[in-house]
Image (cartoon, rainbow over all chains, first blue to last red; front, side, top):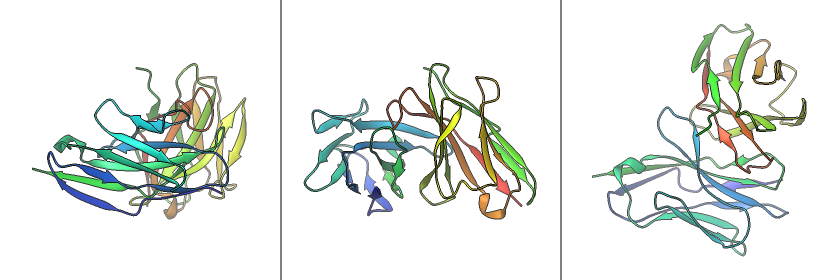
Amino acid sequence: AQSVTQLDSQVPVFEEAPVELRCNYSSSVSVYLFWYVQYPNQGLQLLLKYLSGSTLVESINGFEAEFNKSQTSFHLRKPSVHISDTAEYFCAVSSGFQKLVFGTGTRLLVSP
Amino acid sequence: EPEVTQTPSHQVTQMGQEVILRCVPISNHLYFYWYRQILGQKVEFLVSFYNNEISEKSEIFDDQFSVERPDGSNFTLKIRSTKLEDSAMYFCASSTRGGGYGYTFGSGTRLTVV
């Protein structure tokens, strides 16, 4: 069985500061890893994903995540956050043609 | 950009009543899913559907739940006799391939059982 752990339920940060949202996973097979973002009263949007190849993946709005197999982690980072990044961020894992297993989410609160 | 459309956005129903949540997946997608998110909790998998049959379901998806693709475009989730604990946000998703490849989620239906 697969599982995802997001240790931080909430991360407050000031605008233009760097941020890291932590994600650790557990799986007995090869995995695919995802970060989804949920803005208030909206659905889930794919932020970025790791399927294979380069372990560092980037999104179009400045987020990046690095797949670390030895530490079973897929932490999400952004060097400088904006107020508009305030949202809930979910890490998820899948093993191919299977369902997504989500973490409990991290609420990123960006203040001026 | 193609979207997954869910209706209604919010539904209130009385305990014991049947509800049908509707979804229109992206037209060339082959895999369809329902997930739910109880307020303040994580997103949980309910069921996946491929080739007109359920391919996987979770423990949550008991006999009270059913899915259907009645007309080749809609994908519905039926809850036969709602319980208070069914109150949640229900997300539909579709993909060209399984396992999160190219997943697109709808904006969700908030179901409130009173």
